[in-house]
Image 1 (cartoon, helix red, strand yellow):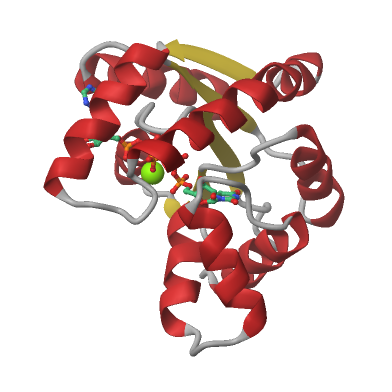
Image 2 (cartoon, protein in one colour; image 1 turned 180 degrees about the vertical axis):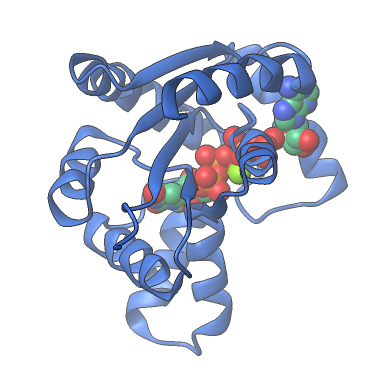
Length: 194
Ligand code: UP5
Ligand code: MG
C-alpha cells in the first residue's frame, strides 16, 4: 500500500521567538524531519562560489530583508525531494508573508498545522542580543535585527489571518521558558495530528 504523504508543520514567529528551538524539539519528540529555511539559505550562500544571484541574496539576508520568494520555494522543494519517506516534516521559519503561503499551498501542498510563536518585541530583542554575543550570525547586528523585526511586524497579521481562515493555526505564548512552551506545543501536535 502507498504511504500517506508526510504531515507538514510550519513554525512561524518573530526573529528570536524560538522557531529553531521548538521545531527541533517537535522533530525529536515525534520523529519528524526538520528543515530550517533560514539555515537552508545560509548554507547555500556558504557553498555557492561567487555568483551574482547568490551574492545578492547574501546581501539581502545580511540586511534583514527577505530573499526572493521563488528562490526560497525552489530551495524548499529541492530539499523535500531529497528527503526519505517521512512520517512528518517540521519547517522552521517559512512562510514569511501571504504570497509565500499561497505559493507553498499551490506548488507544494497545504500544511497540516501552523504553529505561531507569539513573543513581545522586548523579549525578541533580548534573546537576539544575547545570541549575538555568543554566536554572531551575520544578521544579528542591531540594524539587521531592526529590519527583521519590522518585516515580521508588517507581514504577521495578514499571514496569521490567512491561516486562521483555513483553521490551521495554533498560537502559543512564547515569552515563557522553552520547556513550558514545548509542553503546550507537544499536547497540541498530539491532539491535532495523531
Ligand atoms: N531561546 C529560544 N527560546 C527561548 C525561550 N523560550 N526562553 C529563553 N530563550 C529562548 O532562539 C533565539 C535565541 O533565543 C536562542 O539563543 C535561543 O537559545 C533562545 P531561536 O530558537 O533561534 O529562535 P528563532 O525564532 O529561530 O530565531 P531566528 O533568529 O533564527 O529567527 P529569524 O526568523 O530571524 O531567522 P531565520 O533563520 O528563520 O531567517 C533568517 C533570514 O533568512 C531572514 O531574516 C530572511 O532574510 C531569510 N529568510 C527568507 O528570506 N525567507 C524565508 O522563508 C526564511 C528566511
Ligand atoms: Mg532560527
